[in-house]
Length: 543
Image (cartoon, rainbow, N blue to C red; front, side, top):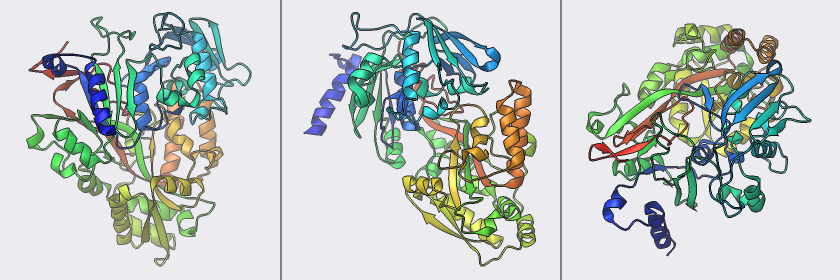
């Protein structure tokens, strides 16, 4: 009965009351699948990709990033950085309104003002809200008057001290603007009653069944010809539980694109070289582009580590030389991604050192020599902790290390359990990944700053190096971009030498896109932006 009710209601929501089959067929509906459930549509809780993709359709912030990760205006039409980098002043558009809500006074739409940003940003750092995004402002903004509305259209943020990556932080979805009267009314239930300013507005949500957004007819952005955005009439999100089921739905034209490669279908879709199989060429477009995601193996340097062997730098360097990453990428990922033979900073970010690209090129003889120099005991057993979805990668690493004389066992745990083990420093050797929160190498290097030890920070390896810390602090205190990038490269060089991690690969954005779509661009943050997406019908674009 529930499913029948859902089917009738969702059909009505898609078609907006249309009466003819012809008009139904021409509706511009973008459909995608989300394997993991969406926990909240409140931008204060836009912590993971599932939430971020949905929130991005409903909300806007001060700025946005273009596909090249360059900050561009959004609700703020321009800005100034003053007082040696400690004051950010934003001049807001005066034509941006929130989606309709009965909680607004007449008219039902309300204009966004600087006071809304004061409320929205203050809410992020409110302990009672308990937003996981509080870290973006904590210890950075002035403690007395961090956010100010000079008037309705001028908004200011004051920092304790200059923080060069701050503009990138403001592009994060935690920094979306929300209306106080709606949030106050719903409280925690705002997560399922969102009201934003975005290109789409909330329509319907049946958890684990479907989520539907409708076109915002009053959206403020336009295309290069002055046409209103977005082009789509609706967005439909399904919740099929696994990638294989989603791929079948994609082949049946029930969803419009697939994000990410999965072992269940990678060989059916891709050649070993990473090209699209010919049988899909007419109906599918393959998108691959750099992704700010470093996949790695972390090594606990101190704390609860059970193995002194891993505390020897020569052993860690040997592990880096022992893995044939090119073969790993070809056979396990069909060359989706780049072998991680350089540092921790991925390609595409200033600070990546292309001259070090082959620093840890496959060299099993060097690995054996380093293990001998380290006095490595072959009877020493090392446990590699991973999740079931990465077991193929873990087995490959296990066999490679065994070839050079290392005894590695694998222990799998569900994702939440593994994260808890890593946070508590109870996993001495673990698989991890770091996806950029914002497009600056500082976000990656913060994983190795000694004041960021887990569980209170992202330094899960408990790496500590005096020179690294000095470089890190110098980088935060300079507004000279060229100097900061050189400091980033210096820090990454220390990570290569000290080897608290084994970088496996730098990921790529991988998308299979229905050839009927135009305007779906990929970007290094793998953000789903649907503002400029259209669907083709009968070889022409529906207007």
